[in-house]
Length: 120
Image (cartoon, rainbow, N blue to C red; front, side, top):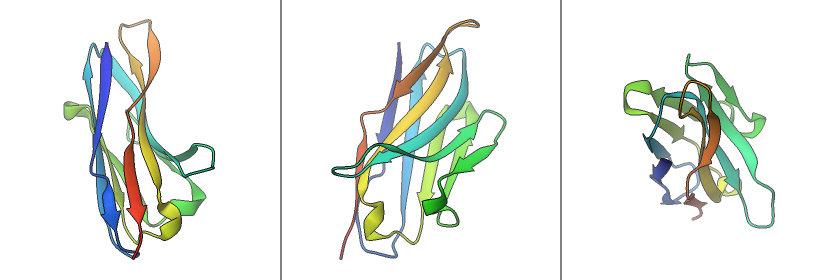
């Protein structure tokens, strides 16, 4: 069994910063990629950013230049540094990972979500 545990959400003023963390633990053979999605009230869940095991990154257009995703492979942890936050960034942020639990089995896992609220 694999668990993703997120931390770092909270309330921040517009223009402020937050750093989200997500640590994977359990029966992990290797992690193919990790990423962040978000879901605002009344909207569908959307991709924010992903990072592969080799370090390749992908970002949603809405957050390019403001958010940075990074990964510590030794700790099975992914980070999302969020700068210049806007009210429209308010959402529940979910960690996502594609993980090999054995050499031949790949599963997708989700964290429980962490609330990010940008408001004055």
